[in-house]
Length: 220
Image (tube, rainbow, N blue to C red; front, side, top):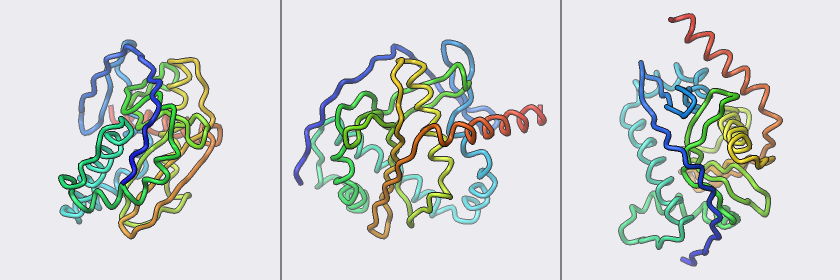
């Protein structure tokens, strides 16, 4: 396997953000208070569906969760220019990585990897997979594994999450990001690439935040 050497221009934000769980919801402790987890908020509308699915498919739920963790770990290691030890990597994860590798190799000038971000405007926080250039354009990049290919209309939550990270990035660094990239490696051997603009999802993200706050406040 030919291993690309990525250029790193990592941005140091000097923020120590800790996460915690309350009543099944994740929060982050930021310098300006307790903020909702962006993944909790953007996944709120689908939570009941996935909770029921996990209940009815416990083994598959464990498998897909493990798949995501292992794939993210391998991609992060590769982007850090660390050697991929194929002999000690399980074959399924390695296959998912290798079929996505051509798209990963389009990344360079990496500014953030698994970096904690937050927004005082959105009152959200989380960890972004990657902020870097993709085909020469500064982007928020998200890596996913999937059992089968996704339809773009079914992954608005991915785009809203990436939009939130773009807002956080601009707020914390002053640098604007105009491109979102979601890379999905599927169990059936397909690789999907979705590119969108943050401006297309700002309204949806705000509506999602409002819905979450309304339901949480109603329960309180």
